[in-house]
Amino acid sequence: MRVKKAKELTQEQAIPTEGFSSWLRHTRQAQRTEEGASVPCGDCKACCTSSYFVHIGPDETETLARIPQELRFAAPGLPKGHVVLGHDKNGHCPMFSENKCSIYEYRPQTCRKYDCRIFPATGLPAGTDKPVIARQAGRWQFAFPTLQDHEHFRAVQAAAKFLREHAESFPAGFVPNNPTQQAAVAIKVYEVFLHPTNASANGEHAAPKHAIVEAVIAAYERFARAENA
Image 1 (tube, helix red, strand yellow):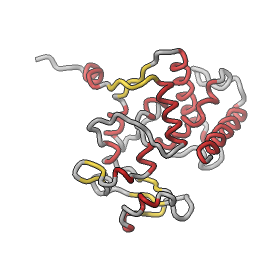
Image 2 (spheres, rainbow, N blue to C red; image 1 turned 90 degrees about the vertical axis):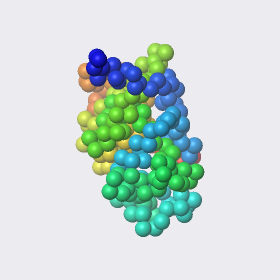
Image 3 (cartoon, helix red, strand yellow; image 1 turned 180 degrees about the vertical axis):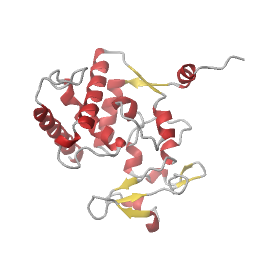
Image 4 (cartoon, rainbow, N blue to C red; image 1 turned 135 degrees about the vertical axis):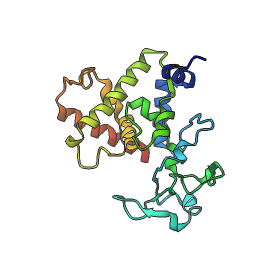
């Protein structure tokens, strides 16, 4: 019996998804609103069982009402009222019961907006402590039917790379250490890197670094204003 190579197994397990530009548009819209992301998860429950700390804002009253007080902890670095929901010793969300979310209709906005496709989209790793997430993320296969899909993909990857390599050039805390949050920032500011002077295949930039940093911060602030409008 022939043993299948890793490459063949990966190809068999690949999950085709929508065109990259379409996915990017929907993802940015999900970040701006309370609609949440639409992810064809199938039977995957990786995000519920991968030791995530889930942020819950003070305005998420219906969610908070369904989570026992003893499971909530003050969110580090955030104003009073912001909390995080921890996980059990197995890395499972405490609201994950009988292989499903017990408060699904009232789940936190963090969960609603989560989409592991952000990792292959940005080129950022899910983290060595998230092997199941990394494996699932590696299965997604974006479609690139148009030139715009390729351009947007390159810009998102360039944004993530710039943030990672020049984190010290931004105000403290602007570039999160958390790879999920870092990927979200890259998606919010990717348009800066659609401009040819701000991104290049070899990592060099025609525009001065400080000018790119300023453009990234301005793009993030524009996104935040639209998000809060």
